[in-house]
Image (cartoon, rainbow, N blue to C red; front, side):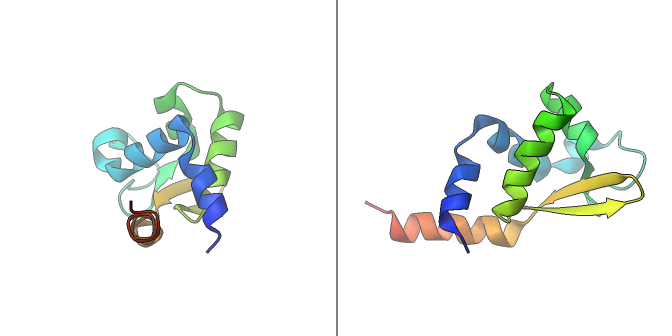
Amino acid sequence: MDRSSQIKAMASETRLAVLRLLAEPQKHFAHQESADPVEYGVCMSLIAQALGIAQPTVSRHLDILRQAQFITVRRHAKWSYCARNEDALRDYLAWVNRDLAL
């Protein structure tokens, strides 16, 4: 696991906001009609809409989170759906607590 890419991913308020939104997909994206946001993930365009930022901007943020393995991205037809990778997030937090504890 590349810790530097994970640290970079966590160094953005926008990316942290994405992770917070994806933590409760049913609460924030219940209006998603194309697929169940809990089971399948959240459409990238709805994430952009929720954050009030342009699609290309959110795509870049999501790619950084994907490279850090904090989210998974599933393609279905012309849509991409994002979900948190809880295992990777738990691993990262354990690493921070263990290796960077003061």
